Length: 328
Image (cartoon, rainbow, N blue to C red; front, side, top):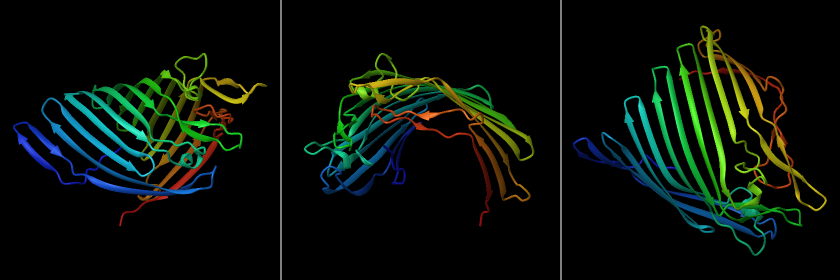
């Protein structure tokens, strides 16, 4: 869901309070496709109308917006959003609630079993956030969210060997995210952490049996660390680390066709980048990178049960980028 900011604005002043209404924009999207089961061709046409209104005061700023999509194949979908933000010196707090949808796209419309139909997947998101600017160089932020999905688009196996997609049940995830930033003139660091918990699911292929709170293929804990140090004029070293907690997957079945589950232990990937700005001339820049420094084995686990084995991730990779930029 997104909002257009290019329309005409109307401002009504009431002392320290004013209202801003945004113009609306009409968009049209078309897609031609065909069904892999039947071979029938079809077209998907989508028309969208969206707009936004804002109300600012000395205490709180409120923004409300909505988008309405109308599809000739999947019907109408309303995506409203309401957000409020308050600033008290170096401290801020934000709250937001919104509804969004995911229209069947990509290969999904092509893989609907004969006699069935699919519709939009919907989600309601509630989020709160607070942050504090301790100094010019130090900032911290903490947020929490709850997302509930319904009419989930689920993968279904087929004896023909061509998997299909149908709407299913509901899923609810909750989580927290924390971020810390430190920035000086020649050095700095960014650290963020996220925790995700699957609070509810009536769709088996997105859950891990016997492991409450886990979603298939996804870690509950994730940590990212980025650092920067300019050791000489226009020359810097930029290390980074990505940590993934335990992840579960299923890439095989037993003799009765039941899925067998396995897990990947917590994994950390380290990267290193050297940047040289204004190399011999102002417009020339050189980047030398090393990804997965320790050549750690990493696999991308499927995010739902589909009897497909995890895909291998990148091994140790070297990169060199020489860029020339000049404004005319």
